[in-house]
Length: 271
Image (cartoon, rainbow, N blue to C red; front, top):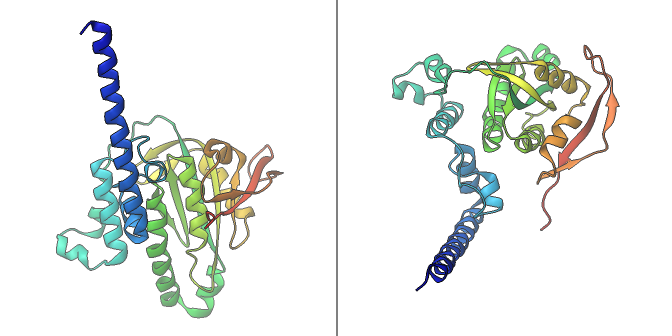
C-alpha cells in the first residue's frame, strides 16, 4: 500500500470511529433526557453540560473541574439537609467559605452577573415577623440553588432577600434569571436583572461596574419579571428556553448613559 492509500485508509478509520462515537453520544444523551429528574441533577452537579445534552457529540460532556463538582455537591447538601454538616465534621463557615477554588488572579474577566430581589419582603417581615421571614428565605434558597448550579453559575452572596450570582456562560445567566423568577415563595414575587461585562472574581465577592449595572437593572424590573441588558443578550445570542423582548434604552440610577434593556421570559420548547 502506497503512502497515499495508507493516509486515505487512516482518514476513513478516523471518520468511522468518530461516527460511532457520535451515535453512542446521541443514544446516551437520549437516555439521560428520558429521565428529566436525573438529567437535572447531573447538570446541576456539573457531571454533564447542558450544551452537550442538547447537541451530543459536539464538545466535551462536561467542562466542570472535579473540585467544582464537589463544591456543587456540598452546596446542594447544605441547602437540602443542613444537619448533614455535623456528620461531615466541618463547620458551615469552614465548609462553604473554602470554595475549593483557585485563588483569584486579580485580572478582569468577562462575566454575566444576575441580581435578584424579592418584592414585598419588607412588608411580609413587618406583618409576619422575623421567624416567618427567615423560613421563607430558607425555602427560597433551597429552590434557587439548583437553578443557578444547573446553568453553571455560582451564588456569590445572599444579600438580605436577594442573590448575587455570576456565570461564565452568558446563556446560562439568561436562563437562570428566567428560572429564578419561578422560585419566589408565596406571596412574594422575584425580580431579576442581568448584565454582562468585565469583573474581578474573588472567593466571596465579585468587583466591577458590571455588578452595579446589574443591580440597577434589577431595580427597574417588576415583581415576577427578569430584565437583561443588550450587552448580556448579544453575548448570549439565541438561547434555548429564553424569549427576548424588544430592547429599549432606559436611564439607570448612577449610570451616565442610557442602557438598552429588554424583558426576558421563559420560552418552553414546542411539544
